[in-house]
Figure 1 (tube, helix red, strand yellow):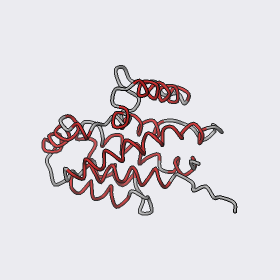
Figure 2 (figure 1 turned 180 degrees about the vertical axis):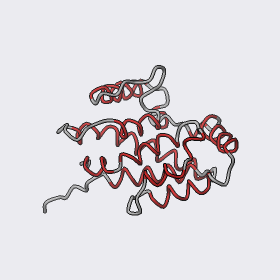
Figure 3 (figure 1 turned 30 degrees about the vertical axis):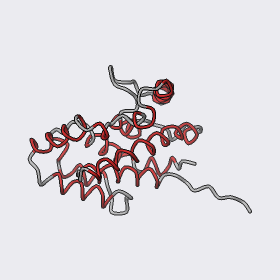
Length: 188
Protein backbone atom coordinates (compact mmCIF):
# COMPACT_ATOMS: atom_id res chain seq x y z
CA UNK A 1 0.00 0.00 0.00
CA UNK A 2 1.23 3.50 -0.77
CA UNK A 3 1.43 6.00 2.07
CA UNK A 4 0.02 9.07 0.33
CA UNK A 5 0.65 11.32 3.33
CA UNK A 6 4.37 10.53 3.22
CA UNK A 7 4.33 10.91 -0.57
CA UNK A 8 2.77 14.33 -0.07
CA UNK A 9 5.51 15.28 2.40
CA UNK A 10 8.06 14.66 -0.36
CA UNK A 11 6.27 16.74 -3.02
CA UNK A 12 9.06 19.32 -3.28
CA UNK A 13 11.64 16.64 -3.93
CA UNK A 14 9.60 15.35 -6.86
CA UNK A 15 9.74 18.86 -8.33
CA UNK A 16 13.52 18.73 -7.92
CA UNK A 17 13.76 15.29 -9.57
CA UNK A 18 11.56 16.47 -12.46
CA UNK A 19 13.62 19.58 -13.18
CA UNK A 20 16.96 17.77 -12.89
CA UNK A 21 15.85 15.06 -15.31
CA UNK A 22 14.87 17.60 -17.98
CA UNK A 23 17.33 19.36 -20.24
CA UNK A 24 19.48 21.47 -17.88
CA UNK A 25 18.91 25.20 -17.56
CA UNK A 26 20.84 27.62 -15.36
CA UNK A 27 17.85 28.23 -13.07
CA UNK A 28 17.77 24.51 -12.17
CA UNK A 29 21.06 24.81 -10.29
CA UNK A 30 20.29 27.58 -7.81
CA UNK A 31 21.51 26.45 -4.34
CA UNK A 32 18.17 27.25 -2.69
CA UNK A 33 16.46 24.70 -4.94
CA UNK A 34 18.31 21.80 -3.32
CA UNK A 35 17.79 23.14 0.20
CA UNK A 36 14.05 23.64 -0.35
CA UNK A 37 13.64 20.13 -1.73
CA UNK A 38 15.43 17.96 0.85
CA UNK A 39 15.58 17.99 4.63
CA UNK A 40 18.32 16.10 6.45
CA UNK A 41 15.91 13.22 7.23
CA UNK A 42 14.73 12.83 3.62
CA UNK A 43 15.54 9.34 2.22
CA UNK A 44 17.27 10.87 -0.81
CA UNK A 45 19.22 13.55 1.06
CA UNK A 46 22.67 11.95 0.64
CA UNK A 47 22.08 10.93 -3.00
CA UNK A 48 20.75 14.37 -3.94
CA UNK A 49 23.73 16.10 -2.36
CA UNK A 50 26.22 13.76 -4.05
CA UNK A 51 24.54 14.40 -7.41
CA UNK A 52 24.45 18.15 -6.76
CA UNK A 53 28.12 18.33 -5.80
CA UNK A 54 29.21 16.33 -8.86
CA UNK A 55 27.16 18.53 -11.18
CA UNK A 56 28.60 21.70 -9.67
CA UNK A 57 32.07 20.55 -10.71
CA UNK A 58 30.93 21.14 -14.32
CA UNK A 59 30.04 24.27 -16.24
CA UNK A 60 26.49 24.65 -17.53
CA UNK A 61 27.76 23.69 -21.00
CA UNK A 62 29.41 20.61 -19.49
CA UNK A 63 26.18 19.65 -17.69
CA UNK A 64 24.17 20.07 -20.89
CA UNK A 65 26.70 18.00 -22.83
CA UNK A 66 26.61 15.25 -20.20
CA UNK A 67 22.80 15.25 -20.25
CA UNK A 68 22.69 14.95 -24.03
CA UNK A 69 25.35 12.23 -24.17
CA UNK A 70 23.60 10.28 -21.42
CA UNK A 71 19.91 10.53 -22.21
CA UNK A 72 19.87 11.23 -25.94
CA UNK A 73 22.65 8.93 -27.16
CA UNK A 74 22.55 5.97 -24.76
CA UNK A 75 19.72 3.59 -25.60
CA UNK A 76 19.94 2.01 -22.13
CA UNK A 77 19.42 5.42 -20.52
CA UNK A 78 16.05 6.23 -22.06
CA UNK A 79 13.83 8.39 -19.85
CA UNK A 80 10.72 6.51 -21.00
CA UNK A 81 9.99 4.11 -18.17
CA UNK A 82 7.89 1.52 -20.01
CA UNK A 83 10.38 1.27 -22.87
CA UNK A 84 12.73 -1.02 -20.93
CA UNK A 85 10.06 -3.63 -20.34
CA UNK A 86 7.88 -3.37 -23.43
CA UNK A 87 9.91 -1.47 -26.04
CA UNK A 88 7.27 -0.90 -28.72
CA UNK A 89 4.97 -3.83 -27.94
CA UNK A 90 1.18 -3.49 -27.87
CA UNK A 91 1.23 -3.76 -24.06
CA UNK A 92 3.23 -0.54 -23.87
CA UNK A 93 0.48 1.35 -25.68
CA UNK A 94 -2.10 0.04 -23.23
CA UNK A 95 0.11 1.01 -20.29
CA UNK A 96 0.61 4.53 -21.69
CA UNK A 97 -3.14 4.94 -22.08
CA UNK A 98 -3.73 3.87 -18.47
CA UNK A 99 -1.13 6.38 -17.29
CA UNK A 100 -2.70 9.18 -19.32
CA UNK A 101 -6.10 8.43 -17.79
CA UNK A 102 -4.54 8.45 -14.30
CA UNK A 103 -2.98 11.86 -14.91
CA UNK A 104 -6.26 13.25 -16.20
CA UNK A 105 -8.12 11.89 -13.15
CA UNK A 106 -5.94 14.16 -11.02
CA UNK A 107 -6.19 17.19 -13.31
CA UNK A 108 -2.90 16.97 -15.21
CA UNK A 109 -3.12 17.74 -18.90
CA UNK A 110 -0.56 15.92 -21.00
CA UNK A 111 1.90 18.20 -22.80
CA UNK A 112 1.52 18.02 -26.57
CA UNK A 113 3.72 15.36 -28.09
CA UNK A 114 4.93 13.88 -24.78
CA UNK A 115 4.41 10.31 -23.62
CA UNK A 116 3.06 9.73 -20.11
CA UNK A 117 5.95 7.42 -19.14
CA UNK A 118 8.57 10.19 -19.55
CA UNK A 119 10.33 10.16 -16.18
CA UNK A 120 10.43 13.96 -15.67
CA UNK A 121 6.69 14.10 -16.41
CA UNK A 122 5.99 11.29 -13.94
CA UNK A 123 7.92 13.20 -11.26
CA UNK A 124 6.16 16.43 -12.22
CA UNK A 125 2.82 14.68 -11.77
CA UNK A 126 3.72 13.68 -8.19
CA UNK A 127 4.87 17.25 -7.56
CA UNK A 128 1.85 19.02 -9.05
CA UNK A 129 -1.14 16.71 -8.52
CA UNK A 130 -3.44 17.03 -5.54
CA UNK A 131 -4.41 13.61 -4.29
CA UNK A 132 -4.79 13.95 -0.52
CA UNK A 133 -8.59 14.15 -0.68
CA UNK A 134 -8.89 11.27 -3.16
CA UNK A 135 -9.57 8.14 -1.13
CA UNK A 136 -8.64 5.84 -4.03
CA UNK A 137 -5.27 7.51 -4.58
CA UNK A 138 -3.20 4.73 -2.98
CA UNK A 139 -4.89 2.14 -5.21
CA UNK A 140 -4.62 4.34 -8.30
CA UNK A 141 -0.92 5.04 -7.72
CA UNK A 142 0.02 1.34 -7.68
CA UNK A 143 0.41 1.34 -11.46
CA UNK A 144 2.55 4.48 -11.38
CA UNK A 145 4.80 3.06 -8.67
CA UNK A 146 5.21 -0.22 -10.56
CA UNK A 147 6.29 1.70 -13.67
CA UNK A 148 8.68 3.84 -11.62
CA UNK A 149 10.16 0.69 -10.04
CA UNK A 150 10.68 -1.22 -13.30
CA UNK A 151 11.96 1.69 -15.36
CA UNK A 152 14.24 3.29 -12.80
CA UNK A 153 15.76 -0.09 -11.90
CA UNK A 154 17.03 -0.51 -15.45
CA UNK A 155 17.96 3.15 -15.74
CA UNK A 156 20.08 3.23 -12.58
CA UNK A 157 21.91 0.07 -13.71
CA UNK A 158 22.82 1.73 -17.01
CA UNK A 159 23.84 4.98 -15.30
CA UNK A 160 26.11 3.07 -12.91
CA UNK A 161 27.88 1.42 -15.86
CA UNK A 162 28.52 4.89 -17.30
CA UNK A 163 29.64 6.22 -13.90
CA UNK A 164 27.17 9.05 -14.47
CA UNK A 165 26.29 11.59 -11.74
CA UNK A 166 22.66 11.04 -12.76
CA UNK A 167 22.77 7.63 -11.09
CA UNK A 168 22.67 9.38 -7.70
CA UNK A 169 19.64 11.37 -8.77
CA UNK A 170 17.77 8.25 -9.89
CA UNK A 171 18.90 6.31 -6.78
CA UNK A 172 17.51 9.14 -4.66
CA UNK A 173 14.23 9.00 -6.54
CA UNK A 174 14.03 5.24 -5.95
CA UNK A 175 14.75 5.67 -2.22
CA UNK A 176 12.05 8.33 -1.96
CA UNK A 177 9.46 6.13 -3.63
CA UNK A 178 10.39 3.11 -1.49
CA UNK A 179 9.98 5.21 1.65
CA UNK A 180 6.37 5.83 0.58
CA UNK A 181 5.45 2.17 0.31
CA UNK A 182 3.93 0.71 3.46
CA UNK A 183 4.98 -2.84 4.16
CA UNK A 184 1.94 -5.04 4.36
CA UNK A 185 1.91 -7.30 7.38
CA UNK A 186 0.74 -10.85 7.07
CA UNK A 187 -1.35 -12.25 9.89
CA UNK A 188 -0.10 -15.65 11.11
